[in-house]
Structure formats: C-alpha cells, structure tokens
Amino acid sequence: MNASVSRAGRPKSEAKRRQILHAASELFLNEGFANTSMDKVAKASGVSKQTVYSHFESKDSLYTAAIENKCLAYQLDPARLSQHNGCQLPLEDCLQTIGVQFVKLFHDEEVIAMYRVVIAEANNNPHVAELFYNAGPKASIYVLAGMFETFSNNRLSHADALALAIDYFSLLKGEFHIRTLFGLASPLSGEQIEEKVRTAVAKTLLLFNHAAGNSKT
Image 1 (cartoon, one colour):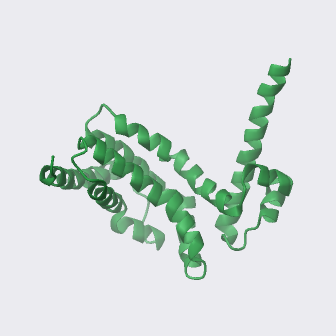
Image 2 (image 1 turned 90 degrees about the vertical axis):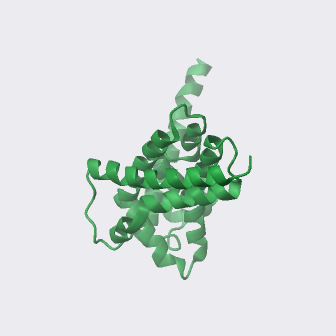
C-alpha cells in the first residue's frame, strides 16, 4: 500500500516540475529574463512560490532548465549526445544524425524567439546571454568535442577537438540561421535539411582527417 502511494506521488511531482517549466518558458519568451520573476512563474503555473523553489533553487537554474529542456526535446541534451561517444557507426553517420537534429532545433519557432529575446537583452543584461550560451551552444559544443576526441583515438588534443566542434556547429547554422533570426528565410524541407547537413558533415570530415592526421600520436 505504501509502495503504491509512493509510486503515485512521483509522477505528480514530475508533473508539477513540467508545469512550472512550461509556464516559465512562456514568460521568458514573452517578457524576457529580467521581467520574469519567480512570483510570476508561480502565478502562471498555478502553484505556490515555495513549490517553484522546491524544484528550482533560483531564476537562473529555472532559465537554464528551460533551455536544457528544449535541447532534450530534440535529443540534444548532453546525456543523449554523449551516447554518440560510444557509437559503433562511422563518424559520418553520427554527425549526420546529430546535425539533422541541430538544424531542426534551429528551425523551432520557440528557439528562434529565444535567440531574439536574448540578443535584445544581452546589451543591458549580459548575464542572461551567458546563461543561454552555457546551457545551449556551449554544452553541445563540449560534448561534440569529446566525440571528436573519441573518434580520433585521442590523437586530437582537446583544444583541436573543441575548435572542430565549433566549426561543425557554425557550418550547421551558416547564413540560414542569421536569415531565420531576421525573419528572411522560409523553413527548410526535410530533404533540404538532410542535404544541408551532408554538406556540413563532408566539410567537417575534411577538417577532422586533416587535424587527426597532423596530430602527434
């Protein structure tokens, strides 16, 4: 009986967390980081402020969780990305799989909106830009760097692997991402996304092979 009650209680707690996270994400998008308070989050999510703090110790941690949650939706959270370090597939296939998910993430309307909000706030509140970068782009780049190190059998230094991860990330975004932020680009079709990623992967493999070949063993 007690075990049943305990099991029933866990989903309820997780449901509350998702409820808070959803409300907070909407507020961050619509009102920005500076204008979003924990009081507003509590009211919007229909819970007490104490409940919000029981799940998230600060507004910073709540904002970080909101960014990480969006990455999780596209299987681009650090834990999921790290699985590719032990991937039995060729590097080309792993990069293609990851790249498609990244480009889809960049297409997400909420992600585009969040980029715009962060850019608008960054001048007066660089802290929010740092939080966004650390939870999103930086976290992904560091996991990708680890993957490049693994596939090179550690012939690549961490610095070289990190530079390569940044190059790949940049190739995936390219001019299209800038045009998307400006509202000048239409969404790519599935085939166009696949082709865009294939091009980025081909260029990245050239850089990888060159860097790994020139590294000291």
